Image (cartoon, rainbow, N blue to C red; front, side, top):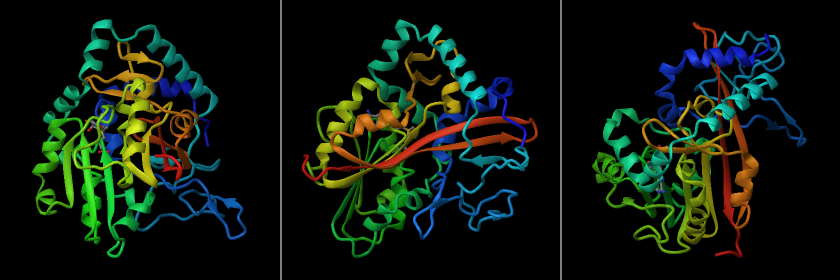
Length: 357
Ligand SMILES: C[S@@+](CC[C@H](N)C(=O)[O-])C[C@H]1O[C@@H](n2cnc3c(N)ncnc32)[C@H](O)[C@@H]1O
């Protein structure tokens, strides 16, 4: 395998700017989740599972049905043979390149005028975002149940009364797949978003209308000091946060965590996935987008933060037990143009401690 070269990535990323303009939100919303890096063997040791590589010891040329998280890059692989490789840790040169990008971003922050404009009424920018997209823009998150088996449990026929609350539900690409697999007559799905347009999009969907009240979409700001309409304190079994926490201003994190803690039952769980530090979407931000460390405003006025693991442990670790919090990395390759790009997401589960509430 040829070593990755940070400078190559720098040139590549710049030349890819046009096609990447659609990558930030769309790709992150649509790309599937990779599986765990390692698999426990019966003796408790961890090993690399069969995957798409040339190493005969672990080679499984393809998976059927196709799953992400299986294509490992090894020494003997040609990085440009496939479009994507999973769990590739960027090398030191790439890290250096990222740091130089961050320094340049810091040196040209967002203007004071824009800082106010984008932070004052963030829901308006998301409204605009949803107004500009047709329903075919959004793709369902079919990998969710595979990654979060709890969703399978609550949708079982005999699961009993269960309440799922999706916060920042957008067009419903998480809530609808759950609704479709649901066999539990006692399941209630609250899908809330602070964008009125997003809520309208969900309510207009056929699946919503035919759910006969199983799914309820409503407007709610996760950083407000009230709870969503119809959601009682201590009544929710599962809260889903998929690429919504990154849309908050860091000053709003505490209020959002408090709200989520309030609605959850003791032992209830948060299912979390969001942007990881060093993701391509972060590294490629240009001048005039940096608001504070790891927090930016996109060209469309929506805000985005990039997390690292320790930070999430601090934010959630007080009232929640943290499980399976892991960074999910993918190396995306443009084979024709010999371009390498790193994507980075972070995923985990936070369980409300029994004694808190
Ligand atoms: C990147 S989108 C993700 C949408 C959806 N979770 C998905 O995965 O398809 C972020 C969503 O969070 C919503 N959002 C951002 N800040 C919010 C807040 N404070 N309260 C509620 N929703 C919010 C936005 O309107 C947007 O729909």
